[in-house]
Image (cartoon, rainbow, N blue to C red; front, top):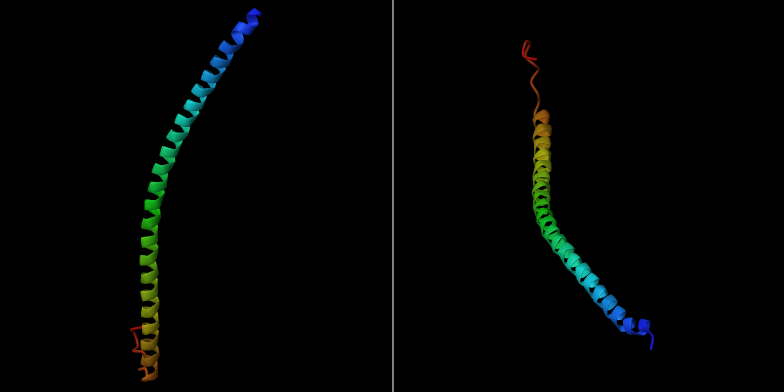
Length: 92
Protein backbone atom coordinates (compact mmCIF):
# COMPACT_ATOMS: atom_id res chain seq x y z
CA UNK A 1 0.00 0.00 0.00
CA UNK A 2 1.31 3.41 -0.97
CA UNK A 3 1.10 6.53 1.09
CA UNK A 4 -1.00 8.21 -1.63
CA UNK A 5 -3.56 5.42 -1.24
CA UNK A 6 -4.04 6.50 2.37
CA UNK A 7 -4.86 10.05 1.33
CA UNK A 8 -7.38 9.16 -1.39
CA UNK A 9 -10.34 8.57 0.98
CA UNK A 10 -9.42 11.71 2.91
CA UNK A 11 -9.24 13.76 -0.30
CA UNK A 12 -12.59 12.37 -1.43
CA UNK A 13 -14.13 13.29 1.94
CA UNK A 14 -12.76 16.84 1.70
CA UNK A 15 -14.04 17.25 -1.87
CA UNK A 16 -17.47 15.92 -0.99
CA UNK A 17 -17.72 18.18 2.06
CA UNK A 18 -16.48 21.15 0.06
CA UNK A 19 -19.03 20.48 -2.66
CA UNK A 20 -21.79 20.19 -0.07
CA UNK A 21 -20.70 23.47 1.52
CA UNK A 22 -20.61 25.24 -1.82
CA UNK A 23 -23.98 23.76 -2.76
CA UNK A 24 -25.47 24.91 0.57
CA UNK A 25 -24.17 28.44 -0.07
CA UNK A 26 -25.68 28.43 -3.55
CA UNK A 27 -29.01 27.22 -2.20
CA UNK A 28 -28.99 29.93 0.48
CA UNK A 29 -28.18 32.54 -2.17
CA UNK A 30 -30.98 31.31 -4.43
CA UNK A 31 -33.47 31.35 -1.55
CA UNK A 32 -32.49 34.93 -0.77
CA UNK A 33 -32.94 35.94 -4.41
CA UNK A 34 -36.30 34.18 -4.53
CA UNK A 35 -37.42 36.11 -1.46
CA UNK A 36 -36.41 39.42 -3.06
CA UNK A 37 -38.22 38.49 -6.27
CA UNK A 38 -41.37 37.54 -4.37
CA UNK A 39 -41.37 40.93 -2.63
CA UNK A 40 -40.89 42.70 -5.96
CA UNK A 41 -43.69 40.64 -7.51
CA UNK A 42 -46.11 41.65 -4.75
CA UNK A 43 -45.10 45.29 -5.20
CA UNK A 44 -45.61 45.17 -8.97
CA UNK A 45 -48.89 43.31 -8.59
CA UNK A 46 -50.15 46.07 -6.31
CA UNK A 47 -49.08 48.75 -8.80
CA UNK A 48 -50.83 46.87 -11.58
CA UNK A 49 -54.06 46.73 -9.60
CA UNK A 50 -53.86 50.49 -9.02
CA UNK A 51 -53.13 51.18 -12.68
CA UNK A 52 -55.99 48.93 -13.77
CA UNK A 53 -58.40 50.75 -11.47
CA UNK A 54 -57.21 54.13 -12.79
CA UNK A 55 -57.56 52.89 -16.39
CA UNK A 56 -61.13 51.78 -15.72
CA UNK A 57 -61.89 55.16 -14.12
CA UNK A 58 -60.46 57.04 -17.13
CA UNK A 59 -62.38 54.87 -19.58
CA UNK A 60 -65.61 55.68 -17.76
CA UNK A 61 -64.75 59.38 -17.72
CA UNK A 62 -63.91 59.27 -21.43
CA UNK A 63 -67.21 57.59 -22.23
CA UNK A 64 -69.11 60.18 -20.19
CA UNK A 65 -67.33 63.03 -21.93
CA UNK A 66 -68.11 61.58 -25.36
CA UNK A 67 -71.78 61.37 -24.40
CA UNK A 68 -71.69 64.97 -23.18
CA UNK A 69 -70.11 66.11 -26.47
CA UNK A 70 -72.83 64.36 -28.46
CA UNK A 71 -75.52 65.89 -26.24
CA UNK A 72 -74.06 69.37 -26.73
CA UNK A 73 -73.80 68.85 -30.49
CA UNK A 74 -77.50 68.00 -30.69
CA UNK A 75 -78.39 71.04 -28.57
CA UNK A 76 -76.23 73.24 -30.81
CA UNK A 77 -77.72 71.90 -34.01
CA UNK A 78 -81.25 72.43 -32.67
CA UNK A 79 -80.49 76.03 -31.67
CA UNK A 80 -79.33 76.84 -35.18
CA UNK A 81 -82.43 75.38 -36.77
CA UNK A 82 -84.85 77.47 -34.67
CA UNK A 83 -83.73 80.57 -36.43
CA UNK A 84 -80.84 82.61 -35.26
CA UNK A 85 -80.98 86.28 -34.54
CA UNK A 86 -78.61 88.60 -36.34
CA UNK A 87 -75.60 89.59 -34.26
CA UNK A 88 -75.88 92.78 -32.25
CA UNK A 89 -73.37 95.42 -33.29
CA UNK A 90 -70.60 95.94 -30.76
CA UNK A 91 -71.10 92.55 -29.06
CA UNK A 92 -69.11 90.49 -31.46
